[in-house]
Length: 342
Image (tube, helix red, strand yellow):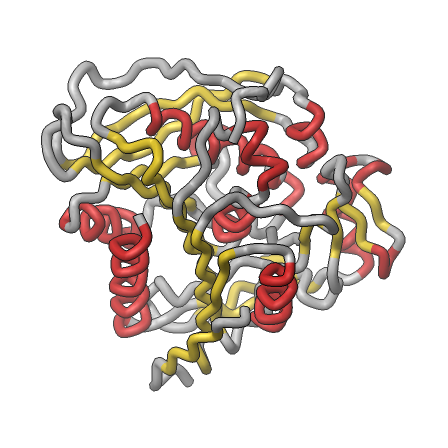
């Protein structure tokens, strides 16, 4: 039962799942933008890419197919000469249509922070990927995120040096991996995120030789998570500290995955978890391998890797959900984090 919300800060610190020298991967033009960005909610479109098979495509400079994604941009006040910080809010395996995304965006607006909520699913005709993670790769999701990052840089009232990112579940993976220097150098347009708050991400996949950007990172995870188990994040934060990351973690005891959703616990029988698959590793080229099962993305890319893991160690059925208390405390935690670090 979730009747208490215990926060245990730890200063110790997979799948779930900035330089100008980008070569083929970078797309900087945006289309069909509002002529005037008004205070409050704005509908925007962002040029991105499609069908990237893995991080190796990004690192090698592969040019993706063009894909326009949509988003909601929340601005505290009229864009003028004053520069404001901004935060990208990344959805998980479902699209960002829940009230949470607007509520958090408005709360950030109240402290003078612009918020952008991209939608990677709806423009691709998808409503979710939890039942089949092979449909949309991490690399494509990461490219979407950096496309949103570059879009924010193009707005006159955004301070490009004060952009943060947060995300949930799969979006939390993206928020964390966006801090990898090898990826940010390819896609960041000369900039890096100033702060990153991944929320209940999977922490099972990591670069063997991880080099971070100069970003403040704080993971917020659920102690009772049976979807993306917290034990991997706790252990991985320790490792990342030895690799030079400025990273901390807070574990919410007795809380389950999806604790931003206030409707209580629900069982999702068709959602896949890879919590029993162990660790996986990205090499310097961006290919992922799962040594325990002899699986490598060199043998068929993201889709084949996922499908093989489903056969070998994946399991269906997860518990997710929270309460009004966990949602409110997460919102407050998020606002305070970005207020302190942007």
